[in-house]
Every structure is written in structure tokens, then in C-alpha cells.
Amino acid sequence: MLGHTIRSLRKGRRWVSSKNLTSRVGVERAAARQSVDCMVIGAGAVGIAVARELALKGREVVVLESASTFGTGTSSRNSEVIHAGIYYPRNSLKAVFCVRGRKLLYQYCSEHEVPRKQIGKLIVATRSSEVPKLNDLIIRGIENGVDGLRMLEGFEATEMEPELQCVKALFSPVSGIVDSHSLMLSLVGALNIEGNRICLHISESKDLENWDGKFPLHLEVIFMPKLVVNSAGLSAPALAKRFDGLNSIVIPAAHFA
Image (cartoon, rainbow, N blue to C red; front, side, top):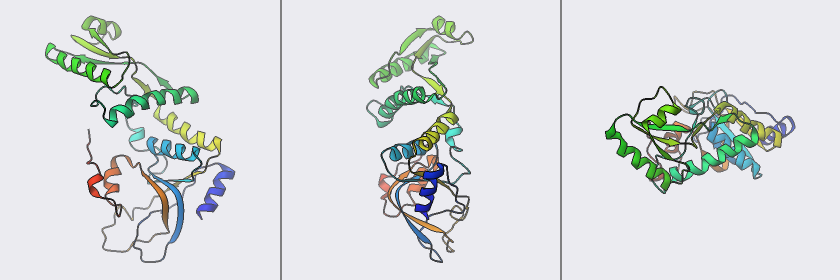
């Protein structure tokens, strides 16, 4: 079944939708078992980007998504800001990934004509008591490798944004915005153009979501992947806790803004 799907994708270079597709051990009746090279759970911006990178390296990739298509969750419900990397603790993975990821994102958008603007950002202090916080931020940003940070007087910030009222402002010239929908379409389109082996399976079944463990699930297929990437967004920690054999100690706690 999977081999046929992949062959169809190679010929037609299209996304494939499969109804009622879930994966869970313990079923009432025998379900088909399919070997998979790489499985990416979640077809948001991160999941698609990961799938693209794996496919470019010659891996066969299946992307599982519970929504009706890709990128319908937080990937399309955000401010679409390209962050500079100012706020994260020095030497943290968040700081490293944010700074390098920003550069790679600008580069990708430029090469693939994805709409983006490096418009910069002002972090303001509306009263003198907030100025020390700006000083801490510029020091942290410089330590993280953020280029071009400048402290501005209130009148300098007002020249840039007349409606602004502040005593001081931290200017980040490398911050920007990106059209997230165009970005995801580009990632998907690049895969189709380059003919890599990737297919998207859509699961519209609520059986697993509503499952309470008291009745058997009716599954059509059980995937047996060599590699699993959990990119389920806000649901990633909860999903990870359902993986058999994964120590809960390594699963980070969920933090919501």
C-alpha cells in the first residue's frame, strides 16, 4: 500500500490524503502493517521543513497530519515574526537555533522568492525604570550573536515611528516578518518540483482522540517506521508521553505564552 502510494507520488508529484488513518497497538481486528523509513508527525512549518530535509537526503518520508491539510495550526495562527534571538539565555539551544535559523530563513526566502521583509523591531522603555531591562537585553542579544543592536534615545525612536512614546528604545535591525503560508507552500512545492519521495496522510478519524482505553480501536494500518520525528506543535509533549518505551524524564514540560 505504501509502496503504491509512493510510486503514485513519484509519477503525479502530489499530496495524498488517506481517511481514518491512525496508529496504535492493540486492535480488535488485524490491521495492515506498513514499513516506513521516516515518519514525521505534524505537517506544520517545522514538520514540512524536516520532511523536506530528510527527502533531499534521499529518505522516504511519510507525514501524518490530523487536520484537513498542512499548516492549519500554530504555523498559520501567529504573528509571522522572524525573531532576532535577543531574549533567550546565552548558549541555550533556543538562542543558537533562533540566530542561525533566522539567517537560514532569510536565505531560503530569498532563494525561493518567499515574501518577507527585514523591517526591524523596536523594544521600548516607556518609563525610566524600564531602561535597565533594555540594557540587559542588548547585552544578552550581543552575547547571542545578534548583529546591529542599537540603543536609541526616545526622540530617535519617534523619528522612526511617530506614534511611539518612549524614553529609550532598543532597535533590532535584523528582525522581520514572513508570509508563513507562502513559506509552507514553497516547502511543499520544492518537494514536488525536485521529485523527492514524500507523501502526506490526513487522518480525519476522531477514534484515537476520543479513545478512553475501554474499547478496542478499529485501525486500517499500523506504521512501523525506522525514524520518528514528533513535530506536533503544542500537542508534541502530550503525544510524546504516549510513545511506548520513551522515558518520561526526557519529555519537556509544555509551556504556553
